[in-house]
Amino acid sequence: MITENIKLIRGEIHSKCVEIGRNPEEIKLIAVSKNFGPDDINKAFEEGLREFGENKAQELDSKFNELGNKITWHFIGHLQKNKVKLAVRSAEFIHSVDSLSLAIEINKRAEQADKIQKVLLQVKTSEEETKSGIETEEELFKITDECKTLANIEVIGLMTIAPFTDDVAEIRKSFRYLRKLKDDLIKSGFKYIKELSMGMTSDYKIAIEEGATMLRIGSAIFGQRDYSKK
Image (tube, rainbow, N blue to C red):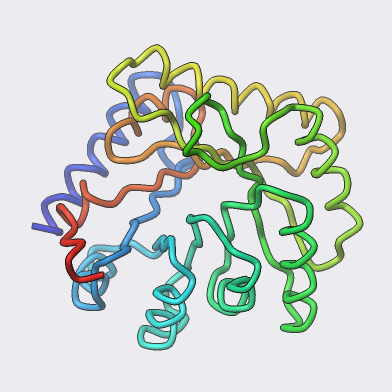
């Protein structure tokens, strides 16, 4: 199943890119492997996937220990400060930096690990109360600017989670706003803000249309999760 799913997803990404005039090579497919074990991850690895995402620091660290560093790990969940050390140890990318205080803690742990930690700033692009993220453009610019003083952090882009809705216009609005913020940052001199992490199983085609460079796809690759195994 995983083999067929990956082939299908790759085909759909390629087709969408051709349709809108984008280069498929611009897009990084991150397989979200939360609640799936090493066997499933290895199957996806055998099909050529190298980027995997986890949303819990302890689960990420466990898989990092078992599978080694042959995989490029992305931390994509809400990150508590007391879990930063684990995330920095295991993840090449942390997508969910939503405050300056969290960035400072990541920088401290990265310095201790003698590492430059690549991060994305998470932006709240909808009004859903359950969503985390930086809430205003002013705050985003301030945090981005402050991060320049943190020697062990490299801010490479922005991340968002679209609203959980069937309203395509609302989803597109969310993604389009993130792209606008990225463009505004670049115009203001933050030319290194290049990545847009947006788009999951239900909305990744819209995300591609709106400029996504990182897709976080789980169930379309691995199938539905069994949360009883948490």
